[in-house]
Amino acid sequence: IVHERGCDPQPRCTTADIPIGTAALLRRGALACVSRRLQVGGTTFLWLEDGAGWIYDRTDHREVAEGPLDVKDLGGEEARVLGVDGAHLRAAPTDDAWAATNLLLLSGAKVTANFRVIVGGISWVEVCRGGLAGWMIMEGIEMGECPETEPEWGRQ
Image (tube, rainbow, N blue to C red; front, side, top):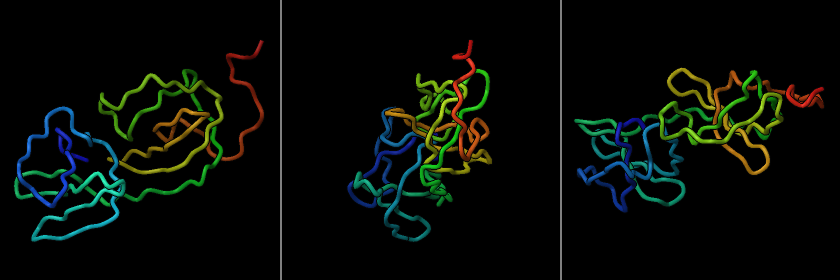
């Protein structure tokens, strides 16, 4: 989603200016999984995979969504968090303030990498560890088999 106010899925295909507001279901930077597309003139309507409704890509006066994006399935590959300070997870692959979370993965933590996507020239990866899941910049992890080591802070 690229529009600054995000977008609210609608039950039918419409580009009517229905008030979006700050509580939009899909905020700017969010990924929308689409299962159907319907082309009407110069606008493509997109049915959200979760059944939440229709959104559209653009009208004559505003762009709402861009894509499709190439999302690569990493199949749960093991990875390790890099960096001295670890990494804060984000709710979506964006640097927008709304996506910030309080979830912190410590340096050296093993994670499972699920998906990779490039947005705005930045490579993001969705990772999980235990019940925690979120997005981080790909440069912050090392992919592949992870040796059995403790995080640096745990050594004496």
